[in-house]
Image (cartoon, rainbow, N blue to C red; front, side, top):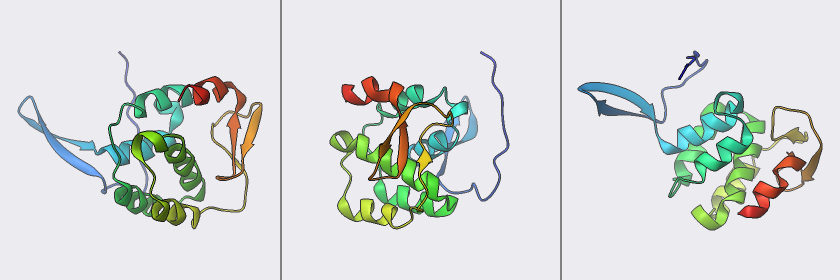
Amino acid sequence: QDMEYRAVKGNTSFGIETILREGLNVPVTDRERTLIDGMNGLKYVGGLEEYFKSVELFPSINFDRIIEYLAGFNKKILCAKIGFLLSYFEKRWGFPDNHKKEIKAHLGARINYLSDEREEAILNKEWGLMIPVRLKSLLEEY
């Protein structure tokens, strides 16, 4: 399978673990950093549907790390997107009120799109996001 590697700008030193693979130490992102990186670069992870299908396999999430990592990225739109995602998977992972409030404290006033594509969408008022209508069936499955 063809792979494309891209440099990531900014401080990217948080959320990285080292694993031993075939005798080599390989840096990889932890679950929470992977969750945020995927949402931050949907076109690199197969798009929105593929991203949701992949992260639903995570058995749990460390919410303190999510808050810490979102602060490192310092992007209001990313806070909205991750907040929506965590609300979506609340039955699976939980979503403590204190963490939800912390993320909401960093939302902007603008309405943004969950997807990079501009398409027919419905407004999620809680997170200030336009959610693609094509995701309706995926969202209803869970």
